[in-house]
Image (cartoon, rainbow, N blue to C red):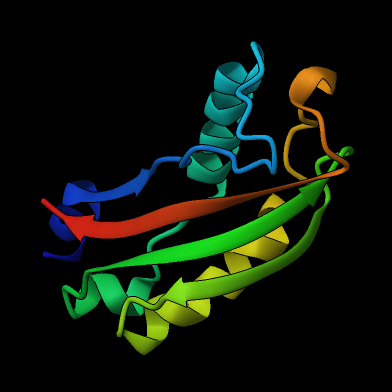
Length: 122
């Protein structure tokens, strides 16, 4: 049963549009967003206890990164409501730091964006 649940679990990551004060969207931003999404997807895990209890949830995390890709701050703006998944968000932020370096043409010293995270069973 557990193996079947693990195989059916999916982790969904999509990176929302990067917010800059000028609302400009640099040419390399889309590639960078995909690189960030891949990095997070590679390091996101479904906690075993959540899998066993068939718990699902979606969170939104507001992140600020610097020009090197280092996460300078993050804030959970929408929790999953499932304690074990909400605790996983903090561990995930530690595993993904630093993120890929943003392209130089993205402008500002710090980039802020909303990261949606999802834990879903299929």
